[in-house]
Length: 231
Image (tube, rainbow, N blue to C red):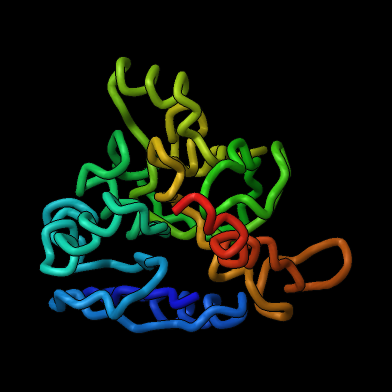
């Protein structure tokens, strides 16, 4: 599969995402935020970072960049899209995923290996996991607190839109320990932790087997091929 990774001004983890795509066996395609050409990609990743310096709100300006109109059209046609950290914020600001993301409740930037529980495997990006699987991938953000009004939160829970929840520690005060969401069809997933940083032995979280050997995040990039039937 051809998987595009969009670079915005201030993107930080676009190269890491491109590498994870390649490690998963796909063809990585670099996309530029000003372009209106998705280069015939089969799936798209919005990477982490600080798009447009995080002015206004995180992801608010990037959600209105030129390429986003093409990405919204692609989403409507069923193209799988993964938003990681700032990418998750962009998807929320674009109205693709419900709710909002605000400053961490303790007011500090947090960087840690974070345990998650996988609550939904019926998406294009999580089909390689099993329900209630516990995984560990890195987390690094200052504005990862998930919020929503009561009606939205009821819909998120009632429709099974929660894909990941924080386990053990809620690092930012997210309501209902929510770490990641999907859209109604399961083609779009957004999450605050970084699966692209747990995709290669020697560079991921520590495990019981060896230091830096955690590769739980790679499954998200291999899953997109397994669940291509969703398109």
